[in-house]
Image 1: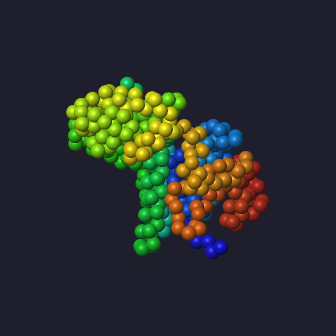
Image 2: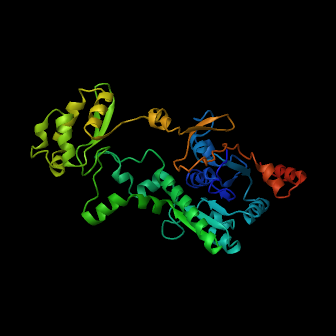
Length: 398
């Protein structure tokens, strides 16, 4: 078979990274063919390695964000460790870091300094709040940034704001770092120069707040928290079914409401009733609208409720658990599952959602053990076995 090359074949990425934002960004690059060299502390490595042991003894965050990378365990507080990283950067295309604000600059690894020294290098700084401003040195964890960006204020029920169940601020920053690297590589292809890329978690998540932010800025009060319901559309919620499940449905216009009333609720008169006939009326009378839908769906089991809603052309979904997602029939039908190697053996993993033409499937490499590639990388830099042994004795590498 003639295999198509992956888009980032031949690109080398060096990453001083931890937790989620930078590791998830560089994992996207690895999946697309880049060689990613992950720099970790000798004494435990990326602290995400210790978050949990759910993935057969490995941490679930780490497994998710770090497949396909080479692990180099080196102490950056030792000048010999910094020199190793600098040697790697001399031949690298991309550098990514998400150290605490100011730490990279103290090591001489901030984007501005590196790009001044290495004009073809693309260097990415990921921070919580950006390099300047009153929050620049504020500690930034995902939940805290979700709060600062307003996401928590619009998520949850009327009584209880809640954070998103995934690290939304980290993921937002990761995806903008990923796309920023791709854009910078395109620019370098025409200008020959790399340059700094700066990403902040706050600015990334604030961009994702576009709808409630614009609604609140331009239309008065921000949308109310409504659980899984919608602040300005009704019916749009989760409803219990007879077998203990829950079905979500969304009516987008008044024609759909009339079909729902006739074909699912069995009450065609509600289609023209002034209390329900328009979305404005249904939203104003949300409790009565929801009660009518809930009564009808409570008499049906989940498969029958879904069948009737789909036959009526009403958008609907099951309220799945994470275990349901792992067995989702659509993911299975589209052959989205693979296995990746790891220090504890093969682990199930989803193909990334960027589908490439032909047979150029994403490269889903192994999850590395801490320092697994240290010796090979140092040999490639010309270091002797004696030199490597001396660094290991001194605790500079692991």
